Length: 555
Image 1 (cartoon, helix red, strand yellow):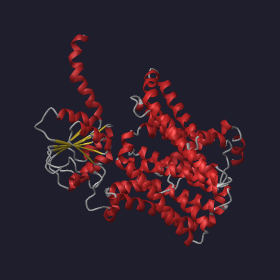
Image 2: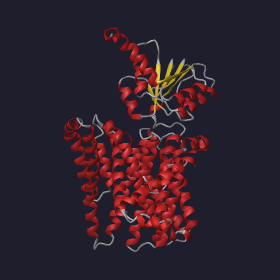
Image 3: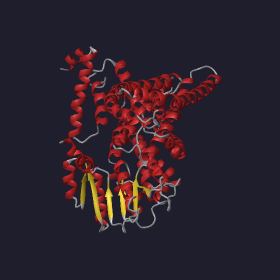
Image 4: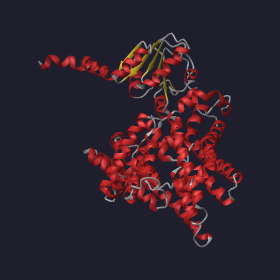
């Protein structure tokens, strides 16, 4: 059977059909086992790679699709990133990113020496442990809808800092074989200037070219989508030509379109393409892993993996705690560095190419990558449950009065008649209606710092808070309120809020929001006073406000 598959896999079309068939089977198996698709797709790469069936023949084609998928992913992230967000989290991202790289390298180096590795090998291993996978973290945060949250923005910020550091390290490593110190200095200066030029191109396009061009392109959504993909891949290619990674160029391409009024249309149309192309990234990653040389490194790999899984988040907890962030934000951001990156494997490969590393050391780093990527995926997916369990032990990482999350206290004082959780599109409309009744004092709670700033600029009473935070009710004056409205149509989040309110014996009205009929039934069983179904509500409002008035004219 395997020989037959291997024979037909020599033809690219049949090879891709086999890959997609195995992907569908493993995805269904993963769903039955409640395992994330990312882990199943990496397993697919190993299964189809040289360590198992050896069915991946068109490596160049798969690698190309993987690179396009990465470009589309980072482009979508850039689309959703406002430059004002970069300004608001820039300092913490820089300090946390550089601090984590420094302390992880330092501690990892001494662990390597303690395990009997040479100084050079310990250095390479330690540096490889510092880089976290931007691609995997962004995908997980996107799936959990946490990109816009405070910890999501900070995590993206210091992951970008890590990417810049790894680019510089790669330049230094690749320049080691060149003659003279002048060559290394020249390469570093050239890359910095190229980076400024690339950033300048993106900013210039954002200000003068994109606004005019996008209005023309928006006449056809197909053309708009095609332009977006072409722009992302083009800037990714330019970034690589300038000595950066394609991720940086694709990310800047997205940022240049972030102020466009059509960014939501572009993003929604590219999501399915992103998910499909990222399949090939994970297949490409898994198929390049050689499991034959890593058996003897198992004990060392476990020790290094535990350091990455536990030590890296603790380093972030300490840095962010000292800077005045709450333990929950620090913990959730810290979990994003609990794995090593695909760049770590590339870095190890470069070390092997220049003769600094052996196959065994490269195999060790590969095994650490497999262990940490697999486990950290679960840590991030179940981050709220883990935090709730270990929250009391995290108090040592938090100041007595955290002062950086000023959103939590600035407008949260006083008494309010109504509390609104989620001041997005639906919640904002409720707030506008309540503005017509000045006798009611209301408070909005939202997890998007940028949205809070916009609402405060409109003199709205809003505070920062995440509905899934076990301590959310300690941050807002809800006891005196007569009604709590949750506009977030997530069943699990609504259940979490209901449990928290029941524990406090809240006596006011509780209104929840649902989209699907099944969600409506589940939330009614939770004991809410009222459950709003968005689409039926919109239809009734349309009938009462408009259609009922024009019916006589239609007869």
